[in-house]
Image (cartoon, rainbow, N blue to C red; front, side):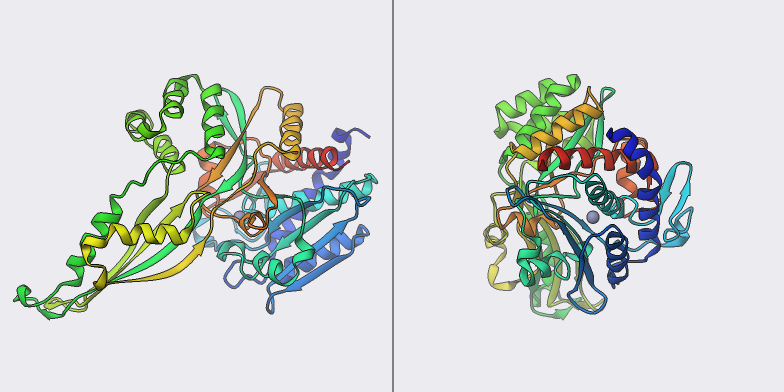
Length: 453
Ligand SMILES: [Zn+2]
């Protein structure tokens, strides 16, 4: 049967899967993903799948199922997360947890991040089964808890407690796949890398005193001011990782207006800042987006100090959000920060790590990547495909560190302005078109089928 006809019948099915998932409120915290996990288990079991729901703690469920292959390689894990971030109904134009369909879109929290992809992946599993596809290796589905709070109670917990259940050669997860319009053509991204996160609290210590005689005290706020000055203005050295190099090459190829700028940058990466300063005059957002793909960054994000108008404070603390490139380590990043602060008097600074997630990158040229490109070109012949690095993190990092090839790929065409799609993720009026649910299912089904047979 042709895929086109096959998918016509699944249009309603994938839509109602998403609507049902949105209606199960999995706002994290607290998460309560078990209800969604059990819902998926039930719908998959009707199709003949055997499912397992694992709870890391009460209510924090993840669901797993598997379609067996003939024993050969490779195996593929279709990964997604069940939890969502909070949504304030007062800010939305519809109820964020009602799963409403309006104007051809499914509205609600998780419509993009990422219950839509969960629905698409479940639909792909069902289609593989209905079509009696003979797979080489296993195709595994995992819809897990807790991604939005770091994944420790979801995929992190599964990799520690049931490693074989989520073991695979390849993973498809969130993080890429959205078409970016470039001169009327679509450029799809595949997320092949993500930055690491280091959140660190720095405490400046001083000696208290009366605000009227500042010289007798040692003001912790003044010390923190120097810390912020140093770190806030820090520009680390430029490093061009494979993903970013290919990404910039792809844009240079497709976008005539950026070709000269990006070719120069790729030829002389050491001068990138000068080149990007020029670009920023034309397009500030783009320039800064490229700049952070080339280096480790650090930004002060919180500060707290002082108790009273006339007391010189002996303590001041600030939080810094530091992002490191694949190939760098968060521990080295912390050392770099400390080195930068040597002259501020390290003895009077304390460092506390709030969170540290290592960066990760997967190889770019694999059979799965090639298959993804091929299938996209079938659906959208004039399109191009580029690998991309996210500056935030996904659950892929848990598996990449075990050597698994992970790609962020949720295929979507831009039927809403690109900026609006990006804004609605974790924002208000999050929605996905029914057409895009069908498109995502079609592309992913074809990619999985051709890769696994
Ligand atoms: Zn997500």
